Every structure is written in C-alpha cells, then in structure tokens.
Image (cartoon, rainbow, N blue to C red; front, top):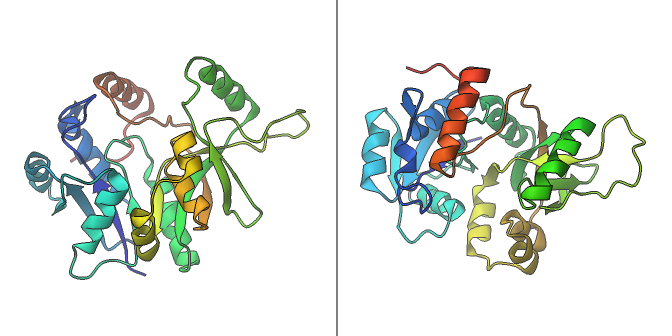
Length: 263
C-alpha cells in the first residue's frame, strides 16, 4: 500500500509568526518534526506542504520534499488534501502530521501506518491513550482552569470512534474498574485519500461547530474513524502554539531526552 506522510507548515501563525523555523535545542521545529516522520517505516515519502517560500526554502535546506499549496487553505487538512492531489501519482493514504507536534514519538505514527496495512479498507485512523486513574484526576484538575484542553474519545468494540468531546466521557459514577474506560485522543490522523477528498468537500456540521472538533464532521457524515491505542511510555505530549510552548518543549527535551538523533 502506498502511504505518505504530509507535514502542513504555515509561516503566518497569528500567535507565533515564523513558527516552523523556531529553534529548539539546536534544530528548528519543522526540522525536528520531519526527522520524527523519517523514522517511520512503510511510507513512500515524507512531504512538507506549505504556502510560504520561506518555509519551503528552509525545508529544502535539510533535504525535505516540498509541495507548494494555496494560501487560501483553511486548515492543515485541506492543505494536505490539496498537496496530495497535486502529485502526478497520489498515494492511497496519507498521515497528516502537524508541523507543531514536535514531541510525538515515531511509534505513534507507526501505529497509524500499521493500521492501514492491517486493514486497507480503513477510511480514517487516529491514535488515543488509555488514561490511568491518576492521569484522569490530573486531567480533571487541568479542566478546572482550561476546560477545553484535552479531547476524549469513546469507541465501540471494533475500535471505531463513537464520539469525541472536550468533556470527559464517559461519565463515571463509580471507581469499580482497575483502569477507567477513559481515552485521551491524540490529534493525528491518517486518511485514505478518497475519504480525505470527501471530508475536505463537506460543510461544517452542528456537532463539529459546537465542540470545535473537526473530526466530528466525519462522524456526522457516517465516515468511520478507527481508533488505534498507543502509549507514550512516560514521555510528555506537547505541541507548539506559542513562543512559551517552544520553551516548554525545550525543557521537556532536556528532561526526557531526544526522541530521534539530531544530524
């Protein structure tokens, strides 16, 4: 199966202009993300998709394949879809690896790739982490001050998503299990390209607009999403939305070590 990884990267972030080129412990954000993607096996190519020549020039400088996209792309999903359809031979599936997800272990991406090889009929695939009771309590405390941080997912016995929410789901009336049936969603997606085409053409849906969760558009339009369980093995999940986040990531790298070797 032909699977690609696409890294959408935008220069003009309102909160962090020039974010892809932000330096973190000797390498830029975009270079770090590309190096993580390059560790994944079973993919045909890793692309950087951008609308800005400054980002493109930087990516080419460290050896990345670059696809230029329109500045009018409303989000990374549309940018990835446009980039893949611009290729002379588009892949059958693509992993959308956001250019700010700098602390994503490569084995998380590998799980998405493996899911497509195990079931080539999959439409969408996304990872989630099973929380412990202590992690659930920590999440509850976090939501007291930032109620819309962290997304939860519930799924059926076939591992197909039933719903995603910023609210903690399911509601727990008793602590009667060794581990709560609570799963934190990781915002990475793999798409069969035909499903990505369909999704990019659909209008926003009521639940999507209410929760501000793009993946609900798929569920509301009966596009199934397969959930793949993963484990960060003690590492901290973090993405970069601001200069403060970049400083936090540097601290976490100092504490946990590098995910992949730097050149």
